[in-house]
Image 1 (cartoon, rainbow, N blue to C red):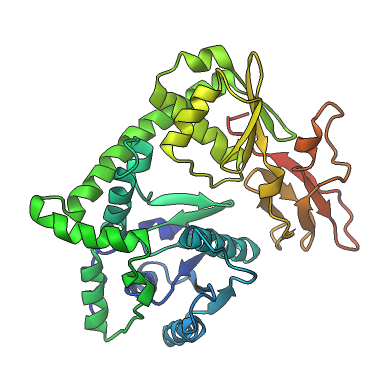
Image 2 (image 1 turned 30 degrees about the horizontal axis):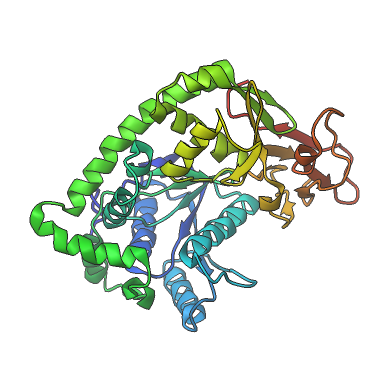
Length: 398
């Protein structure tokens, strides 16, 4: 078997894990991830449990058969495999974005319920370059041009992308040397999708020096700049933002308006990401308009899953009730789980967590009704002896 080249994947973060899930669609990138992870664990961490997850979006007639194919490959490697189906009606527009949200949501839910501490995806240097070029068309924000982060989080589940320095062609060479096939998704050549059009444009730009490697290097530079902004915004938030355990924060206007525009946008992005359920990514122009709204605009607005209200002295942010999932979160055997990206719920295994809605949420009388409705309500299983505990995860350290 060909050695797992260190330049193809950095799997060292897996040393600290006991159970890791692999997102494998069957394409060359994710299939290479599966083979590389299996090879690495055998040599460096034999006790590590690897589980392969495939999401069947139900958008193509071949998808069910492709999922079975991935299952067969996983079985050949001695890895357990689970197919997660995206059920229900599909959107008529924004299909790729909604499919991505559904895919990550399904896999994150599985990881929480099965105590997988890390979810790996097969994003490559080519994906990074395409992402940067797509964002360059509409943004100059360092946070946006940082592209795909190696480490992330989705609904409380940690994400890791170990192939971001690998070219797709190198991964295919690795698979070919193993005699391992992969699945070609016809949608990857469909010009209706922006990423496909950008991929074709990038091929034509390489003669001018705009290569995938250069775009990936730009992403790394912007990521370092974004990290600096992240630290500055964290310090500002710790000093000026007041949070309530019910799930609402208050931001003073005057100190906010004295900040430079990039820092204003970074602060707003952090607030929206937290109060929007954990994975909001507003566009820079939306953040720019929101920063202007702080000084003058309608009393309330919504963005990225958050509800924001303006007052004379500043503004507040809370969760938008319409964006809270009605699907109950089941507490796993560990006895705790993060609900809606904002609350750590500790309860008996099997307890169901859902939005309080019109139920009497155990928060203060002075808490607005629209905040009370987005508070978690816990239904304990029969025989549970201890009351559930709900801890609000603050955007700033306590």
